[in-house]
Length: 176
Image 1 (cartoon, rainbow, N blue to C red):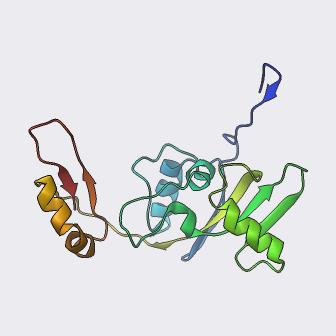
Image 2: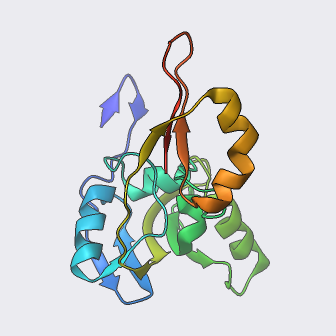
C-alpha cells in the first residue's frame, strides 16, 4: 500500500501453519492468535502464556512484547525458539539462540521484541506445551489488602491478574 509517498506492509496473507509437533509450532507471522489457538487446540497443544486479546498477528504480539499474566511465565516473545526475518537490505535470515554466528544470536535476542526496527519477521517457531484449561475466579478485594498480600497471591495463583478502578466505591477485581 502506498500513501503519501510512504510504503506500508501487511502480513495478512501470511497466515499458514507450517508445522505443529508436541513441542513446537511453526507458523507464518501474519496468523492471528485466535486462529493459531484454534489450530493448536486441535493438535492438543497450547502456548504457555498470552495477552488478554487474541486479535493480533503473532508478529505484532512478539514484536511489541505482549505479555500475559503471571510473573514467572514470561512474555509471548520468550516462547520463541526461532524466527525468519527479512532485513531492510532484503536479506532473509533464520535465527535462534542456537545460531552459529554471534550476529545471528544477537539478532534473535534483539528481534524477539524488535518493534519492527530490525526488519520484518515472516515466520516464527514457538515452544508449545500440552493443552490445558484454566478456571476463572474473580474476587473483589480492598486495594491496600491486595497490595499487602500481593507477593503471597502471586505465588498461590501463577496467573494472577488484577484491575483497579480509581474513584469508584468498588474494590479492585482480582482474577485468580
